[in-house]
Image (cartoon, one colour):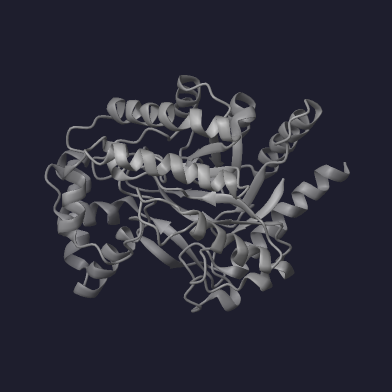
Length: 395
């Protein structure tokens, strides 16, 4: 697998030249300053690409070319946003970039209740506690109808927990959760969140699934003609929050979407961390069923914790070899898929991967890196994953 690294552009605290010391083979990046629905111009793409080339890297994967909320909800701006999306794909193809990751998560890109939870070894990790999320939903956001999502016992626990929090802790909890809203960090107010939630009031999971199929039916013919590979990232976490529909949370969800739009351009981003939060997820089965459609891989690990709701478990970002996902078996299955592709003569036989998320370790602590994206923690993860790949390659 091609060993890649996510880099957030000029504002990233990790300098590109330093990544040669890490052994990075390709960069995963995006134009984060361009709003969803807007055009990625040839000039903006070229500027980012030149920046990477000057430091000896290729732009291996776009993550992400975002799908706007107007497309997800099929609101009036959808037609203009689809035109911009297709033209952005053409511009990326002209630049020679062929793998484009996206997601179809409503409003939330990811959700954690603590961004830097202390770990026994002295480092930190991102953490999700369902009780704390209920506190936010019920008592900070005060979402209409929120009580129906929680048992009476959990509502009582949330009320007690909220009463125990200081004003500073309440603000911190809100900021941690809205950090997963695209481009928002702590800038969105609770009124902003409620306004966005209202746009999904009449959208069921079935309707959102159809909206994704409609989107792919529009863009996949363009991507296929250009030789591009689109790959959808799963829901993170893989269960409903804030009453929002989730449609890419399991292997069956992926099979449905990939079969509904049977194009070589319609593919999957296998994220072992997001999907692995679900107790029944089997990454080897995912590769066995859908391997030929995997265009990109996020290798990270999560560890479920005892919590208040088994269907919506507490979890934290574990070290790459220490969570609930059998990373050795997963990598073995992916390398076998690569060999199958190579034997079949596929030009895209090599699958780009990256060590996704990482614990903050050593000099990461206090460094102010993007939550989940420290240098040392990800470098440790990549080294461990590289060791597994090397062991199988030499077997």
